[in-house]
Amino acid sequence: MMHLLLPATLETLYMVSIATVFTLLFGLPLGIVLVITSKGHLLERPKLNAVLSYVVNMARSLPFIILMIFVIPFTRLIVGSSIGTNAAIVPLVIAAIPFYARVVESAIHEVDGGVIEAATAMGARPSAIIRQVLIPEALPSLVLGTTITIINLLGYSAMAGTIGGGGIGDLAIRYGYHRFNTEIMFATIVLLIVLVQLIQASGNLIASQILKNRRR
Amino acid sequence: MISIQNLTKVYQKGGQTVKALDGVSLEIEAGDRYGIIGLSGAGKSSLVRCINRLEEPTSGDLQIDGTDILRLEGAALRQARQGIGMIFQNFNLLSSKTIYENIAFPLRLQKLPEAQIRVRVNELLEKVELTDKTNVYPINLSGGQKQRVGIARALANHPKILLCDEATSALDPKTTKQILDLLKRINEELGVTLVVITHEMEVIKSLCNKVAILESGKVVESGETLQVFSNPASVETKHFIDTTSLPSRPSGAGHWLNLTFSKGSAKMPILSQIIRKHDIDINILAGTIETIQNEPLGRLLVEIDTTEATLKSVIAALEIQHVQTEVIA
Ligand SMILES: Nc1ncnc2c1ncn2[C@@H]1O[C@H](COP(=O)(O)OP(=O)(O)O)[C@@H](O)[C@H]1O
Ligand SMILES: [Mg+2]
Image (cartoon, rainbow over all chains, first blue to last red; front, side, top):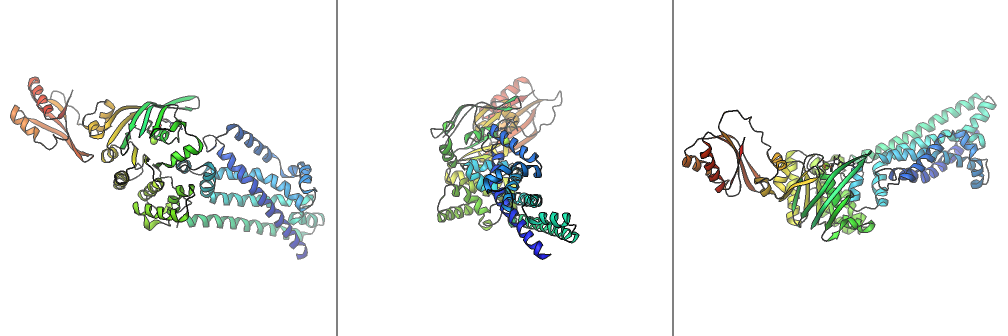
């Protein structure tokens, strides 16, 4: 059984970690732009904000399984194939970016307006306020939001297995479902539960560690 | 130094317009501790926030040392802001940074060398007496300590002006006094011009050499604090000053007079002289002595049971001695 579980787990970890990196790369700036272009904020741009918000909502209303098929031409363009682990990462990232952007948006929105104002009054430019005020002040919420996003990606990655992405989900379907191998099925479920618990526990630990540090 | 001409600020809020400032003109001179007092909603915050353009005035003119602040944009505006410190009612410290880093924040914005930042921050920590809190986070500080960090941070770039928006309104009386003393010291030792927004008379009395009374977006009175206090010209100002609650006026009794003793008259036995001279009884109903800008200012509410004619000569005698009198009907 190990010779099946180990490579599947590695594939899942590969998909999820690469997808996480790209999701943060695009989702964090998008979330920040959603906040600072909103009314009364740092760089108020109502039209841009409305358009971005609309696009994000649209992307979020597609179920992952449909989005995955819908973006196949785009996947082919980027990866050169629509099948395989790398090909699965593309729809994962596309699905997670709008979700993560909203997570970032709500975390950054919670930053006290007075603190932003104080920085503005000191002559800070918007880029400095983003990097030195908004992100550090929202860091604990951002960490928790990122944790939820990674767990979401893990869930999506199981579905991505069906287009040849491999991983734990793929194993569960091929052995557990098609071959009625209950042992494998059971093992994959346990594995997924353990992974989710590990990710959540690490996220909680990091966030509380940051907060604890600030009470020093 | 700060010259404000005919400033207006209109807010649009859901189809409604609020005129927060309605033609405000003020001259604040270098070295002033200029108080702006008014009830909640009078437009005090709007006014002070126009000075560093946290708020855009709707119309009017605002110059600082001859620079037209309202024309500045981008880098020039940011540069001007670095010369204007600001402290807030809720302190607005960064919870993610230590006290040291909070004070270093405005210096880092200027990308100063690390050694220079360290020297300046330590200097400021000493000035506000918080050297023992260097590496602590704001959550562990009391309100007074937080405001002292706010003051240190605001002073980091050697500003000429310090804007204080209700800086002591969240503090208890004892801490308020400490912060007001610190602000006064900063004004006297560093020559920083203070613009002090408050709804508390006590703050004006103990800190400000000049005061403007703001009501519904208009300056109803302004001038030297002692002058305004001892001789209020407007009804609104009287409301602010008259914090002593008067006993209710019984009908049919004698004449009631409100007497205000200032500078020359506060320390002299004027009343007993008048009693002897006019052979009348004076009944003291209420009284206070306040200290405004280190000058005593006394107020007495008295009752005199006498004829109209005698009352007139009593009032004349009082006014010769520089006692402001007001007959209460
Ligand atoms: N951002 C805003 N939008 C709409 N109305 C505002 C805004 N800020 C202040 N006001 C209104 O302007 C008036 C003056 O407010 P403010 O300057 O905060 O007064 P103060 O500081 O004296 O309490 C109030 O009626 C307030 O409701
Ligand atoms: Mg206010």
